Image 1: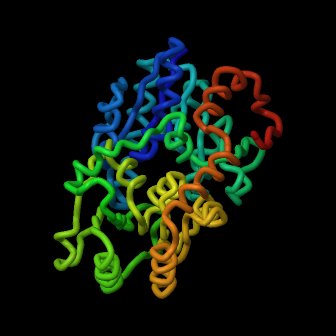
Image 2: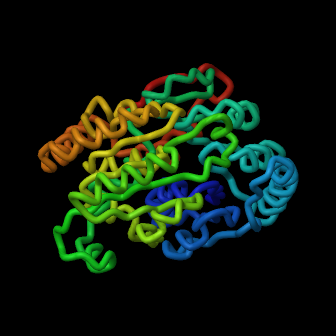
Length: 350
């Protein structure tokens, strides 16, 4: 069997990496395809995967339109060359189109509910797997499961925190620190939305600095007074850094959810609600808001709480969700060919 897995974001490498290793162990030949956007290619190299880069990602509206044509053609050509039996992606328009035109199946994972993308890839996709907490009803192709994407790679079966992270951060082991994640706000779903103001960024750093070291990882330019806090966390170190942090404040939903799954209390600051982050709030792990005053209230609540209680909350979460990688592996190996694609297969996986 041959599979193409298309990558559109660094998080997608993490999402599919353990699945790919399991399938490769079984003799499946896998090719990753990706655009050079952030550090997707570095992550693919680090995992030792065979991959094909389609070139730089486009940021402007006109660039995205050109990219749709260019990357569709590149994906179609790669399909003709590699001859996959199946495409897998996180809502990839290019994978969906190529699979359809070559008469193959496309299996999509979806957790964001960005309908401007879903309506483009859904007609060309056979099955859409979504967390059960996703509110969007995507029709007869949707199959829900009890979990989040982040569990696929942060489940204890696949992730073990490495305390040598402290040396990498040049900190004594056990020293308190905070991670602030700021995004660029140039994705299609970011239009009309925003996170922290520059004044609030400065105020947040000043508050956290009273109790711990502060590290900022940012896609966007920082105010001059915050440049000394900026750090580029190596991709392979990120999840270890999130695990040992005392608090995470993030404008990005993926990092907020990752921290929550790892048992690190997090404030998610964004006017775009994410159902998985909202579900994690029920476990006392991720606090969701786009109100400046609430941000600082949540920070104070976290700083005054017992750090160990968040680890216990995360254990409860993991016990109540499924092992997402194992679910995906079982679905592809044992179920995919039996799914009645043309009939109503909306269901919930437990």
